Each structure stands twice: as structure tokens, then as C-alpha cells.
Image 1 (cartoon, rainbow, N blue to C red):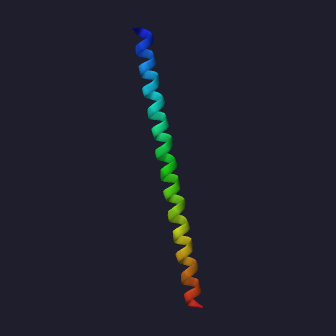
Image 2: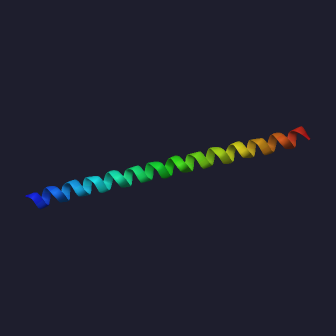
Image 3: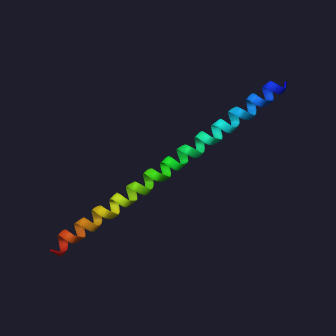
Amino acid sequence: MLKWMIGLVASMWISIVIGIIVALMKMGDLMTFRDSAVSLSLINNERCMR
């Protein structure tokens, strides 16, 4: 019974940690995507100015 409980808690913690890592990776991808979009728009604005 105790081993079963420990296994259940361990699997729960592993799934939580994996979920947090995936969420952070998605947030990082969104941040880099936004930064690249901002830099592209800045480059386009500079081209229009000239």
C-alpha cells in the first residue's frame, strides 16, 4: 500500500514538473517569436523611412 502511494505521488510530481517545463518552453517560444516579429517590423520601418 505504501509503495503504491509513493509511486502515485512520484508520478504526479513528475507529470507536474514536465507540465511546468513544457509551459516554460512554450512561453519562451512565444517571447522569441514576439521579439523576432518586433525586430522585423523595425527593419521594415527603417526601409520605409529611407
